[in-house]
Image 1 (spheres, rainbow over the protein chains, first blue to last red):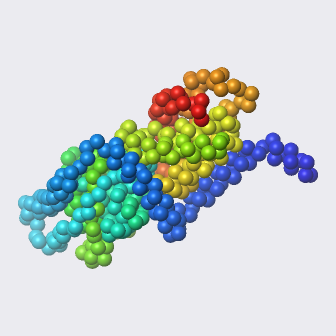
Image 2 (tube, rainbow over the protein chains, first blue to last red):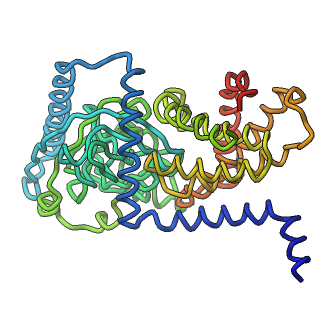
Image 3 (tube, rainbow over the protein chains, first blue to last red):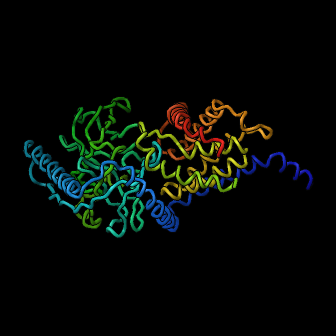
Length: 279
Length: 157
């Protein structure tokens, strides 16, 4: 019996080890949400990010001056203000009553830089040089002067990981600025898409997409992107709207984290079904 | 030394992977420097060495980059195992042609990328052929092209 086992082990040890390593990997995947693991990951990537930030600094040929950063911050604030004003003009043009019209608060912006990027087609992520010492907390929106980029998912002392919009875990409640149609924007691995919009709703190319008033994660009216095309689905009853983001996510270098107070944001939000799906 | 080399190569390659390689990405397709390293290690030292390195370096990469722990270790174990399949004990270094090594890097990193997306992107509705071509072969080919300069140093690995 023992010799049979030994001979089996000798002949198949590579396959046994292979199976064991794959099983360990899969079981490791199941513990990622554990708070202790998240904390451990935050410490680990925090230390690695110190080194990668140094490397990024070396390869960053276009070193930004402080003035440039200040101008970028100002630009981002003005873009947000501009989007807000534009959406108000559209509403006024349609002679909508002021009922349900919410006051848009401009949240403080914290300027930062992308230190490293990684991930695959489904889990786009980057690490930014802002952490708990800059008052960053999990769930804060990350934007640029052009529009939305992603959301903070894990925070260490000096660095944070950000799930950007090309990440299947990232969903956001959005509105088409021209007709106030609500939907959930998500990444399907190929395109950014707002699913299941009734075909009776008129949406056409270049319509502007902004974050929704109903979002419990993002402040309302942050620019997201524009409509690229409308695809018919479900026997012509529903449409999938393909969106192109305003920001070129893959080349993002400088970002801003919106310092929002979740409770305050939640209180300003009218509950609806979309928030349940949003992450 | 055989056990220190992988770590010595891993650290600079991991740094390059997260800082420089994103500049070469096209439609979220990146060349995979860690994948190339594991394929070479597996091919030159066998299945066990390849997959053990694939597992530990993959795990280390997941931890250091804040990614999902277990995802890279899974795909890179397969990478190392696959590359190790082409290992021959009696073969001498000078007998290894660059073309053969390139082909093995292509196969191993393609499988690596395929399983990485397959496992991690389970929420996405991809069909297997699309996944194999766009998220397997194309990144694998990209990695193989990127491995050309690395092959100059292959004697040192």
